[in-house]
Amino acid sequence: MPVISVVVPCFDESEVLGAFHDALTAALERTGERFEICYVDDGSTDGTVERLRDLAAAAPQVRYTSFSRNFGKEAAMLAGMRMSRGAVVVLMDADLQHPPELVPRMLQLHRHGYDQVVARRDRTGEGIVRTVLSRAYYRLVRHFTDVEIVDGAGDFRLLSRRAVNAVLSLPEGNRFSKGLFSWVGFDTVSFTYPNVRRAGGRSKWGGRRLINYGIDGLLSFNSRPLRLAIHTGLWLFLSAVLYALWIVANTVLNGVETPGYATLITAVVALSGIQLATLGVIGEYVGRIHHEAKRRPHYVVRETDRSGPARGTAGLPPSAVARVRPEP
Ligand code: UDP
Ligand code: MG
Image (tube, rainbow, N blue to C red; front, side, top):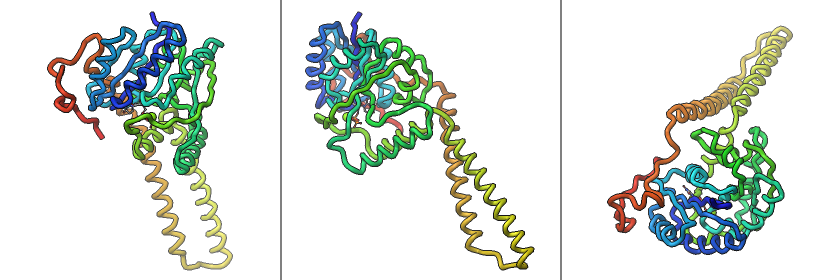
């Protein structure tokens, strides 16, 4: 049985996979421990699977699972953790933004008794707009959720076996790993490393994907946003009552006045806005219930290192293999 399992989700990473694999193997060999590398191909269309097949054929420590289409990084990390057999599991990206040289240091910290070792990146070399928005977002999340989610603490982390088992025991379909890791608890330590640029290929996190991810983070952990709606409603009701009292008093003291058209329209528009936003929040939760109620698996496997290449596609160039595109 390996001591260290490294889980690597890969989506269209054929450009950097070779360099990443060499760097990771070198770093792992330096630890002197038995290790395995669990690659998860998340429905890549650029020949990543073919590379994984070659790597697995060349080294017994390399294992892989390939999805039938793109299911997202969360699903890929879940599949990797399920595959892993090691006493500790390290999760990292394939694009060399998570430096493999840090793995020995994480292992060392784990030996000091920590169940989770988090490597946090700082924000050097990142656009000012993105930095400011991220900071604001994390402040918001901290305010609205019960779990602690730290800025810069991504998915680059080491987990002990019992922490991995705890994460795997959470059954939800809508997985927001940053929150799940924090939810399971255990002693956690973190250290910071300077941000690294992608070694090649493109980031898959465009603006919209990032915003949706952000909404997931806010709503996945509790119903506090709904509580905010209740609070807003109560305050509005209270101010309406006070305003009504003021109007009555004014009418009694000064006689009837012509009612203000502007006040009326402002109140109507403001209230409709709040109602629509609240409806949206409720809708999000209902959507999540609907999603969970279907109890679908998190991903579908096309092939693994055991099953070998999927029938009929072996040897064909990647462009010749029809792939189902993810739903938008
Ligand atoms: N990834 C994945 N599935 C996806 C998107 C990304 O498995 O749908 C993987 C990707 O191959 C990489 C990691 O998740 O190993 C981080 O992705 P990326 O570098 O695009 O994100 P960023 O570093 O820009 O946040
Ligand atoms: Mg990256």
